[in-house]
Length: 242
Image 1 (cartoon, helix red, strand yellow):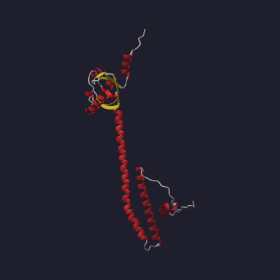
Image 2 (spheres, rainbow, N blue to C red; image 1 turned 180 degrees about the vertical axis):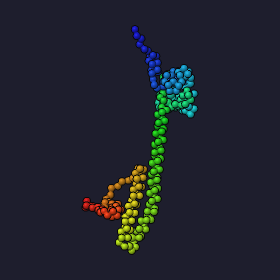
Image 3 (cartoon, rainbow, N blue to C red; image 1 turned 30 degrees about the vertical axis):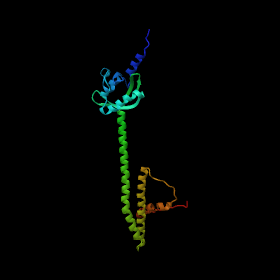
Image 4 (tube, helix red, strand yellow; image 1 turned 60 degrees about the vertical axis):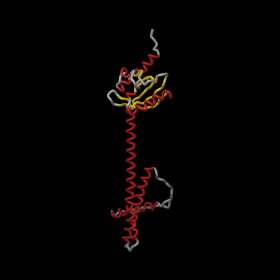
């Protein structure tokens, strides 16, 4: 006849096959039983741990918080998601995430090694912070550059406007008009650069308003018409009433 495994056998099997770190401790904070996964993760054997207090294995900086939770579980009955650092046999520390429950005079707990996961999360946070810093530096650069360009540009536009009030030949007046138009186009471009900074900062306000398409394109058309004239090419743009 085959024997039916009892609760004790089931518990032993569960401890043996678990990839997570299982343990039972008493009210004094000493290990009563640990699973073989403790050896896999931390290098300590069951013989070395059973009967020993767990606090000496914990990183000194994590001992106060761990001791407080060991007391709190006596009244709360359960701990979920607590992370502390346990010393590996080789001296390194691994970060363990705990779930524990009080039953009678013993605490039944399961831990999972989250060292690699937390390191990856820290790297992602650092990379995100670096990306945000780089984006802010770019935004600041665009804003500063735009303001630096605008100052001399306003001077150029002002001088050209004054020059247009003097006596000029038709050819000179055409060139002055082209300079003035190009200056205004460049001024709008500088404003667009500032708008780009606002877009990236989430501060751009879009409004719907009528505008003159021919006037908006005038500067670009003048510049390209001059280049076309130099090559003996015709350059024309027609706008219908709509």
